[in-house]
Every structure is written in structure tokens, then in C-alpha cells.
Length: 129
Image (cartoon, rainbow, N blue to C red; front, side):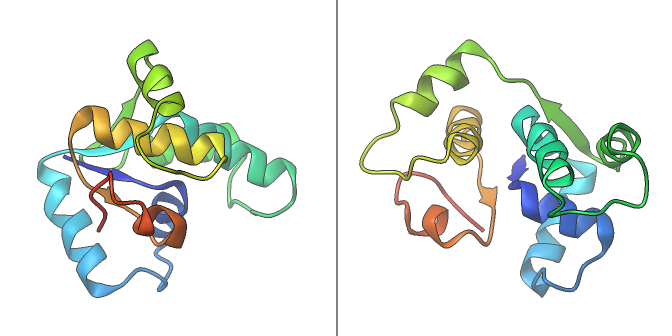
């Protein structure tokens, strides 16, 4: 399994050319396996729409439901274990709670996180692609 950071999920669904070849190949390869989307990513999408930073081709709930129905995609719930892990990440991590939860999700599921977020990539306690 892989976990997609929110921006990667949005770009993948929209076919945005911001994803590099390696990321596209890895995501495509996991369509037959498992592509995890943290529940907090649904909230982040809704907040981006609310703030006017993201325009979707469908109403927000409809877009989320469609995006979660892509091949191999599984919504990963926000569990007590993930919540606690997000508050106890080793080392130093920035204060964005959504990023903390997404990183904690990848750590709990022991799988790589597909991201282009430099702060997450620089964090040595999570595998990133």
C-alpha cells in the first residue's frame, strides 16, 4: 500500500502534469494493490474549496465520493492510534495538523507516502516517494 498526500490525490484525479513519471508509475502500479487516502485529506479538499484555493468540476461531496471510487483507492479512517501518533511524531515536525495526521497514517500503516511537500520529504521518520 501507498498513502497519497492530499495534493497528490487531487493532482492524480485531475490528471495534472505536476506529478513526475515515477509517481505516476507507482500510483498506477498500486491501483491493483491499495492506494490509501487519509480521511483528513477529504477535510483538506473541502477546506481548500471553502477558502477558494481549489475549484472542483463537481460539488465537493460528489468530487470526494468520485475520487474515492478510483481503482485501488481506500479511505483510511482517522483512528485513535493515528490521532495519538500524530501528536507524538519522533524528532521535529512542523505544526500543520493535517500533515501530522497524514504522516502518522503512513507510519501506522508502515507504507510510503507519495508527496511533493518539502517539509514532509525532509522528515526522516516517514518513507516518501
